[in-house]
Length: 452
Image 1 (cartoon, rainbow, N blue to C red):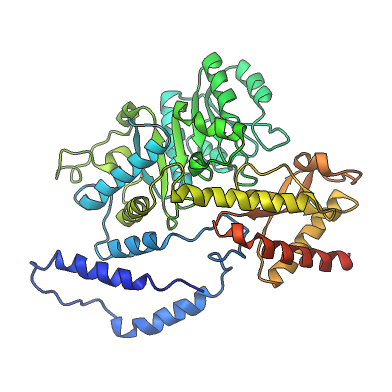
Image 2 (cartoon, rainbow, N blue to C red):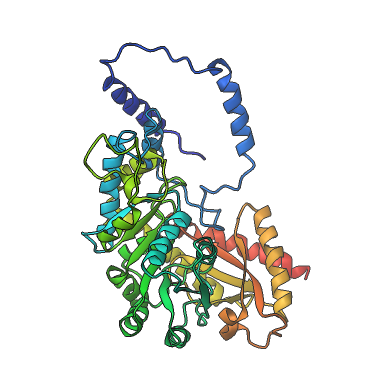
């Protein structure tokens, strides 16, 4: 089941890389323990069997997507050099590749002038965005919706910035009316707009948020860690497309190439519209930035050592699959959304299930129908287990009942939250597997309901 043919390509590339250093004196590899390495790797393979099959279409639970083979290969190839993209001394080629790859991401959002770099993930990227916001508006409040990622509240605490949550509407998007009521009280420095919430893939109404910025004055940070690449997709609703089309107007953007960008974990990205914020990163180092007058990435990053291999993998992937509308990469995203719409339609037309709202991106949230919310919550966990026994893997989520309110009928609302099933259909091949996924879900649900 695991793709192995690409190892031949790695061997060829490694031979080419080796010739680039042929002028050096021979150096025998003295790495200790190599005679026992095969046995250790065999043990590693055995240990790794204790995983869900994240690479397979039957895994449709959490936000786990296998990296593209070219990303794996480029990352592995770079490991023979092991560059560090902090200073140019440690990663000249990989730093240039990072700058180019990040500029391509910025261009995807309509930015030519920008300041940006890769990070270890979305959490660190969001930390940098809120750190800059706090430097520019110290002691002012950070606002985000109740469905925004919990990291914003935690990061605000780390940065000692006041934080408040804003209620959501019935589609898990930031409630604009509630936002304006809070803005009218003053003291707000930053509003976080989430374009692709972790739980439901909901997209906050960015045009309306930007309209409020013109009235009240605050920074807008777009947390597009999950959904950002969907700005390339052509099959979104007009409302969702409008939010993505407004991204050029925000002050900062976070996107995670290690989600929809087909990268290994450890690859986030932070972008600022105004390059002048780089002055806030300024710091001195007595030994780091003297090899070149060019910008060292460490001079615009809070992180120090960062893997150059992550930049090499991203650069290679974007060369193979450019970030362009109607391109091969964009069509993969559109397939993910088509899969989600297909699954949603099947669930919405089946009396055994209660769907939430239609998906904006590629996440579908639903629960089994029961006499009460607590009963449906219990059945959700049983269906989760029954499907897993058939090698189909969903996730379980705890969400407000209001997200399901229009479909509850006479169900007794004895809880304010509903334990539901969540399906993240972020692999393009999910489009062709929905029939089989549905068949197993139906069989698992029937088994549970027979014994309910």
